Amino acid sequence: MAELVVAGSGPQALTLCCLLLQKRPQWRRRLRVLDPSGTWLERWNTQMRRYEIPWLRSPSPHHPHPNPHALRRFAQERQRGAELEGPYGLPHTQLFSDFCRSVVADFQLADRVQAVAVERIRLAPAGDNPLELDLSDGSVLAPRRLVIATGAEAPVLPGWVRAIEDPYPADALQHSHNLDLGACPGLAGQHLVIVGGGLTSAHLALGAIRRGARVSLFCRRALRRKPFDADPGWLGPRYLKDFRAEPCWHRRRQQVLAARDGGSITPELASRLQQAQAAGALQLNEGCQIASARWRQGQWQLHCRDGRRHQADRL
Ligand SMILES: Cc1cc2nc3c(=O)[nH]c(=O)nc-3n(C[C@H](O)[C@H](O)[C@H](O)COP(=O)(O)OP(=O)(O)OC[C@H]3O[C@@H](n4cnc5c(N)ncnc54)[C@H](O)[C@@H]3O)c2cc1C
Ligand SMILES: NC(=O)c1ccc[n+]([C@@H]2O[C@H](COP(=O)([O-])OP(=O)(O)OC[C@H]3O[C@@H](n4cnc5c(N)ncnc54)[C@H](OP(=O)(O)O)[C@@H]3O)[C@@H](O)[C@H]2O)c1
Image 1 (cartoon, rainbow, N blue to C red):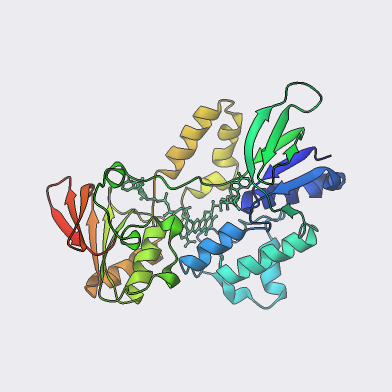
Image 2: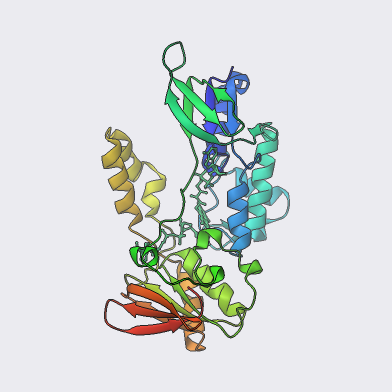
């Protein structure tokens, strides 16, 4: 019987499983991890490859092993210290991936992910276990505890995208969620509009420019430059003490959103965007929001809230 079911096998699920097994090895028998990918960190590895991300934004102590020094030690033992970038030791993508594979092996978790999705959670009518889970293979599980670690949900599209009425070619409008830079044909010579002021937009802009496209980046606020998503005080007791003392989940979420404060890019990517701007490959539209988009004669006609109009081949 599975007493603890973890839905999802991303970095959060792996972190939790390692910590649990380190503290309570006897839980191994009672633990089940469910993810349609059937493997660890599939979504993570896919997004890194698709957006061609050379290294992480998060510093070296940030990883699924319970010992914060484990990644640095892993790199040093393999003479791969050069793959820890800059003063914060930002791990190169391949190093991080190899390290996570070794963590999975060390904790004997390699064959623990069952390739099914949790489709529905129900309160059980009676009995010892409070929950029933309907799984995508048609079976039902009744664990005592469930951890939902399923990551970000489906893309949230702005209202003006949902309001587009004209038919348009599928690859003329894409959300980053479904985008694979390497599989985007014919970018050379095209004009792309990318909406967003976070690191994903910045990487996609630079990737498209590398392929010969001209990019206009639209950020609804001014582009913000920060080494990390949130103040490093959130990694330790400075802010976490009060956060953990807050019993209300809604207020906790508000604290998280305030600490995150929307999207931002690293100073390194900011300077690469600046170079692209200077070279004429990038136009930066800060404080600019699209109000409507129409597909006319093979192009996007974009109307912004400030009254300006733009054209683009792809969004
Ligand atoms: C391009 C990019 C780069 C990033 N770089 C960094 C970085 O450098 N450093 C950093 O700390 N963070 C980074 N992030 C953020 C990081 O990806 C997320 O914070 C992290 O992946 C969240 O982990 P997670 O385990 O919660 O979810 P995910 O990694 O999203 O994993 C969730 C898993 O749940 C599974 N799942 C979904 N629905 C179900 C279901 N119904 N039943 C069972 N399983 C299900 C999915 O298949 C998936 O495998 C980056 C994000 C992006 C998009
Ligand atoms: N390792 C790496 O190099 C790397 C690469 C990519 C991503 N990441 C990480 O992955 C996480 C997600 O990054 P992300 O860039 O995908 O998301 P993000 O940081 O949340 O940024 C999303 C951006 O979209 C904008 N936005 C949202 N809704 C909008 C709307 N309706 N109209 C216009 N703009 C809208 C937001 O604007 P506001 O800012 O105004 O809210 C924000 O700038 C972050 O933790 C990031 O650090 C890391």
